[in-house]
Image (cartoon, rainbow, N blue to C red):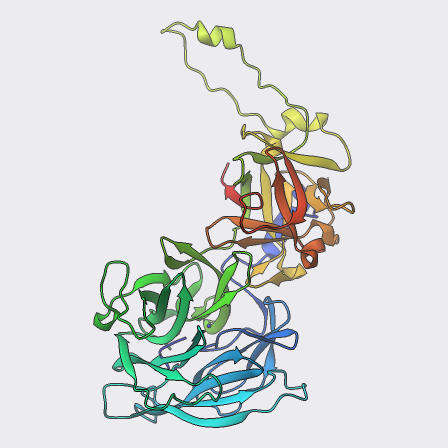
Length: 485
């Protein structure tokens, strides 16, 4: 828009087809009212998360999955951003500019409130004033503000494709421009910027490409970094952002077109996600929507991750490399080892059939069966089908999932004694719902919905025993990989 910018419980065989038909595609994130353009960084206030967009108003959510309209932001204008410092929530937004009726003359304004909840007695916006502007003639367009608060200093980047991206320093106590502070130009060929800090580096993220053309928008998010908030910012190839550089972070995928307006969500325990908007969700009339995706870090650079997709996998422990499996007796594949070792050079070559579910399932115990970890042997008790359950809700950009032994009615469950077992699948049983969140290194944390509030996750105890214990981000024991069989 104006701112070219930015934010198993199911009996498997008979029920799986209908569940997969109901489940949203992996790319169709979030439930409820998700229509927004230029979403601000997600901010937590009074038990809910808030994001605001162009033209005023915004969305709120309790769980980061189901969103609803009704957030209140006065002032109209375009592309706000929000940050909490002390007991204040600062909101910055722009009036004018964007190349629309106001041309490129614009003011970046500031206001504050002590709550973002319209029903709170602390909810009341107080306008501070203008902290940056453009006159419509200079090679700059003062919209798309974005905050960074680091080491007691408050920074604000702003600007669009029309000219430069600039950064100024604000007083965190008042929200006003630090006396005597002058804007510094830090990038070109981008808009909808965002700022992050990590391990001594300042990161400037910005949206490249074209916006506001639905499925024809070419928006994509790119990044450079610097040791100083005022630059110079370089990409991974040493190209300055002041010369149009930028390493790709996120782009169109699946049915989601035009990624823009990055906003960091740091949830702790090595789980970082980011909000953004897609210019067009092809499953939602090609409209601009809010999305939330995992954020990974590779070689010191941020890159978009991916929620686990529906399918069948081996679930491998990062701790030992062993695979999660139904705890059953080992069944040998018919094979004469002596004949193999003594085979002659002219003996015929034949295919050895893989072990199938009918070969082994009759010998499996009825009722709940414990699970364990063992070397991967490409066996039916080691293959797990991951099925999204968006009808059951979700958490920060990912639905809850059901995890079943492939082709069976046996679902992974969190038991009453806080252990893990495969039990008869029941689509109404919350103990069979799991949160699967990608961590910043690309592995996944598997958390039972039933005990999520207690911080429990599936963790490898030694090399052979999975259990539900508190997740430790400093250990590989609670990290898992989903690998195709």
